[in-house]
Length: 408
Image (cartoon, rainbow, N blue to C red; front, top):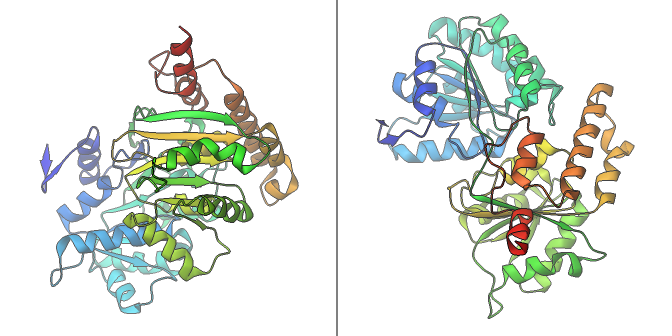
């Protein structure tokens, strides 16, 4: 089906129609399946306000810029961002006056003063929908629980007639149930799709003593025969800020165009890394987890973990950054048992509710078992961790499947 010149992907039309019918909706789709169109099109079709709640400011501002650029100068803008990073207070005023079909804000902004102002707008001009992106943050069972998200249940109390759409790529079954309960979704239309990403080839390697030994294979892949960097976007996740800098320096020393990103770096320098990576000027970024969450770049061809992710859900979310354009991409975890063991320390568990510490450590241990499994298909094993049974015995592209084929 074609809509505003857009050709629907599987499941999108049904979600859009459910939104236009005023239903509560839960969308559980893998990264890259096109969740954002599910709330964008209803807003554009009706002209009524859809409020999008997300924890990722950079991702929201990117969406706003793309939407407004799509209509061109001199025409009505489609979207606005409201929050501390919005320097133009007139934009915020116009947003709460209902001048934009799409209004993006963080849960902190919503709960600080946004809820009252939206209730006033709703009384004058009924809102169409609340869209809760990264909805797994609502659940204490999830890998990325955020207390501010838990407060979003107030949306139903304050404006019970406004439908709610929850969207996430990383929710195992118990988290899915908790999302529906926490947001008080009423008889929601639920859209689930498999978490399998057939275009992602997964590999796990054993971390060696030094960077040269651990990353030698990656360096070879990143360099052409003449020593020039291959212009294919690569995102390297590392656990700490020091490792982000040291891995970037290691690659730079080998004539690879790489830079680092972490929360302690100067804001202007972080923005420069962000812009250069999105534009393709910077092919390799070494970053802590904060960077990848806010990246909307469909042509990332390689995601590498140098060190272990904390949980299976976090790992799945990270590799989901790769190949969102449908093209082939490679995902490699380079880790040791010591990388997993450190997550049981107080540095990584302080501040978490006791029950969540147990769940995080359980997921970490399951991911360690996955990494050390050299026989099962990686995708079969990963889908099992995500609460899903794979409809196949072998993906044919992961390191374990390739090894079996080579020895057959």
